[in-house]
Image (cartoon, one colour):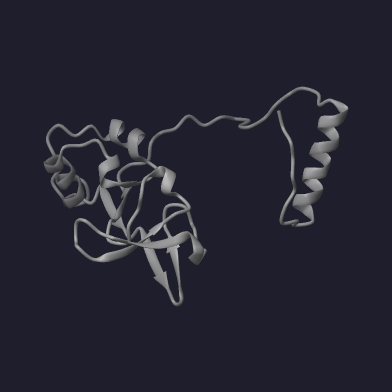
Length: 152
């Protein structure tokens, strides 16, 4: 049981949580049999989320956060035979239509390894690297919109 819902017999929550925690996925991106996926939906281990939300006079893509109207375009939908918007900003991750929900894992969170000092590095920057790093910090502190950096 999860909450008050019965779970599939062969359920391996730990494996599923590592696969799906923290992701918003289209149904076709979830490699589970339809009947098994349906059981997980009924048990509320996956929650459908609208992929594109209409907000007053604009739209919001729930996958990439796009709100620029120029990056949304209409397209006829093969499934429901209507015209829907799709997000062009995240098209490389697969087309996402208004009528197609994303699915969020609602089961136990994956027990990811906790690192004591994540994203740290011990070393020395060259003079040029230090100059670039200092300039980046300044840009962030000054809330500059752009900073062109060439990194190799």
